[in-house]
Amino acid sequence: MMMDIDENAALKAQAAIEIAAAPEEVWSALTGIDRWPEWQPGVSAARLEGGLAAGSVFRWKAKGLGIVSTIRELDPGKRISWTGISLGMRAVHAWTLEAAGGGTRVTTRESMSGWLAFIMRVVSPGFLKKSVAASLGALKSRSERFGRAPAAERGKK
Image (cartoon, rainbow, N blue to C red; front, side, top):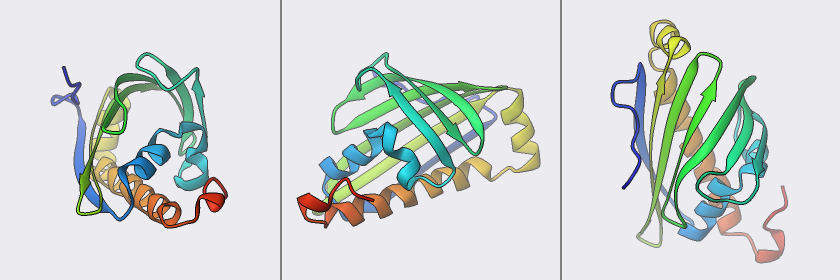
């Protein structure tokens, strides 16, 4: 069964993007959690505990907020979803990758619930939509940059 976002959450967003890179390259960037700070603006730290598997935990900081996430669903190369908990908030984030026209179509859905999400909805109603769009843009930029690079250059900043 596919995990989905919380439709009753205070904040919800969905977006998709076409990336001119192979699904394997996009998957590598998305699931290379320890390397997120290298290409995701706002992510200052990220560490996966154990291997990439359903049930694995990763701890990260986004815009100064500490988050503990658990991978809930993993279909290698195609789909990953996780839940995240931080001060006053619970998030659910699902990503789907599909080969499309020589590249990759990435769709993401996210929800945030809890008192902090409710306050954010009041103070900055477009916050989550902007955040999801920024994440997709950063993933596109990183994947296209490395997707065209010779193998020897991949993994370098």
